[in-house]
Image (tube, rainbow, N blue to C red; front, side):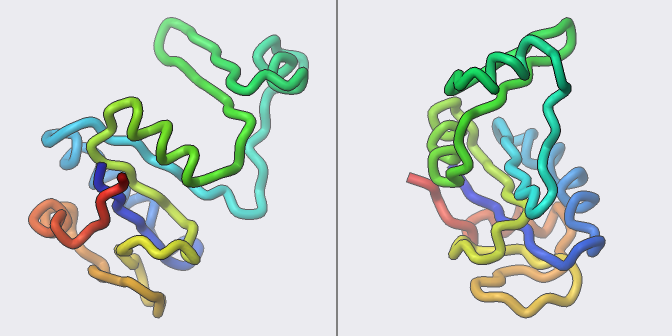
Length: 137
């Protein structure tokens, strides 16, 4: 599984870039995305069954509706989440954030950072340069 880490300052266009990159990567294989939420917390809807199961301590809580499946995992470990994605057959995992991690990075905007292999690329440029990115094993 290739790790494609995208870093940049707040409001630099990281999410917009990733939204354009995903369909191009999907032409090659399955894609997962991990978003570092930083200091804001993802809110589970109060009083809902899946929230109550999570709050009761379930390791993984999953809700399935007619359009999607949503899982909440009782972990904040990036490496564990990457293993989870790899075990599910993702060919690519795009990570938004986690600037301190040592994976090869795409920088959106003007951020000086270690292991920057591309700055402000197009999705096509990334596809042609997949060999620059780390393999997760």
